[in-house]
Length: 621
Image (cartoon, rainbow, N blue to C red; front, side):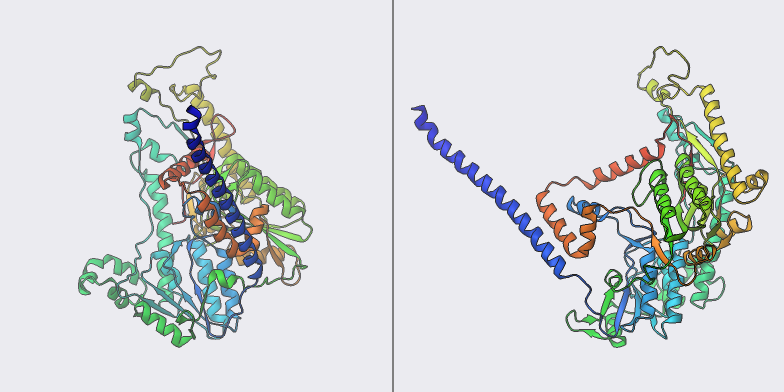
């Protein structure tokens, strides 16, 4: 009787299991078939389509301008598959290569700057792109540079100002607001919580830890930042006013009189930009499209003007130098400096040193250029990188440092073993100082009625335990260690800059400078671009003819090489396939919290119970 009852149930379960198993196999087969189709399409689509005459190069700088993209193609694809939006980035070298190639490309009729998705850049990077735009205008034989946008921010407008014609949407505007920053100060909040930051520093202007032991900026901080930002602002306004043929001081006056000038145009920001001569005309998107068709050619398929964007045009840009020519190796040091290994976007002490060693041991590479865009980080990792450059010089290969947006604190440390140091006039550099932090939370535990006790054989055994108040003997010990690193820092810098330690200390103390200010104080050798640094390296290496530029970077993995070889054809397909197989997505807030906690952990972690950091807590303004 029981078997009679269970037999129908068994048949139902069996059929359900068969259906699930068949569905699983079908799904796997579909995934395999999709991957196979993507591979076939990818291989059949190799090679860019030939450009037609009167093509407009649309210079759409998507995301932030960087020296080197962070993350691999595999990581980006997997991030998209999890529902995350990878941070858009545009490589500076790609923009320069595209503009230089377009100037001599007969199929490119003109360039359109379209910066609505531009995520910004430091002033050094902006100077590089602005110079490339000016080169294009000079060397292209009369080709025009146009700019159009729904609105223009301060950094984007610095580039837009170089265009021959600037157009703005009638509901848009131009926002130029100056340089500077406000910071949060946590002393009272930490006191209420019962947490002591215990910041130990050397350098009057070394203000990295200031927010944790003060309720506002110190006079030294205000002095340093006013001098720094004042110089940056003066250079910015002078450059834009010259490019737009405005009267000297026009931008500063417009900001001071903004309320009255806005009232005069009845609050119309686009009309204000037109009246102030920041733009040449106002046009809707369809009007701009018609103008570009008239200036170039119509694309019948898209019903718009004939165009190619930056990513598409890069496929047409061929290497400029012969692969057999003598090479200059470029190593990019971008991001925070951390101990050990790190991928693109951070400077790993071991991994960056390995790249420098790789360049040194390559017989075809005759000189090394270190492109620095870093606010610093680990003092230990900084010294590992600096020492590798020192060995490279001793081996007979010239080393030139090219400072980008920021080369401060640890970023300056790794720049000290060079034959020549070049900075952009607006590079943020210096910040020669050291600090450490030993936070304790014994008062917080007291408020929670949690008590700590035990036995140790020496006072040092539990000295670094954050549950206990900081022992003054430990404070004195760490202060001595931090002072030693500062003395080592200033001593090495003095030797590199051919100064006495006293002379170097006068411009150190953790203070930041612009590139021009650093040149005046002997902290760099020259002002110049990345191109100038490459030329200097070629001269020092006595390279005859035009050298080949070789970026020395981490070798990609097998999957990364596959994705790269199939470019943009296979990667999006893989993303969709993986996304279909991974329907569950973590909330964005969880990923953000993980990222923030990871960054905090990396900053505070060290090889010892405490970590001495050479970091300026600064970004490109």
